[in-house]
Image 1: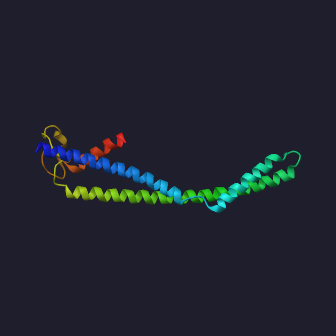
Image 2: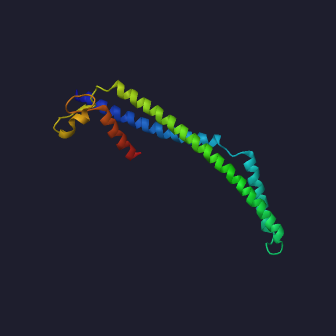
Length: 168
């Protein structure tokens, strides 16, 4: 019985660790995919190139000697900067929306996996220890098994999750 309890303990720890790593990898992959899909618009690239060209042209002009031409170029540059900023803000909004959706989908799938796992093994204690060790908390720790001195799956999963969260 002790070997079976220890194997369940290790299995649950590895299960939680695997899901945590899977979550991290999926989140990073989702961010990379979102960045690839949300590339800049050709109009934005054209505006940036034109703005760089105007800035280079403006640097060749003396602000004191040809003020009118310098000011005209500055207005064009400012207009292009506003365009580029609006393109960028739209892209960031879309990227944020896609990140949120992907994060919610990942969390929902992991939640569904956890719930399924908890339902399948809800009556099996992870490990049985002397009930005096955790005297005031034995009932809470043993939920939902109801076995005195047992550590229930929800409690053990929470403990493993917190330990792994600190490590990763």
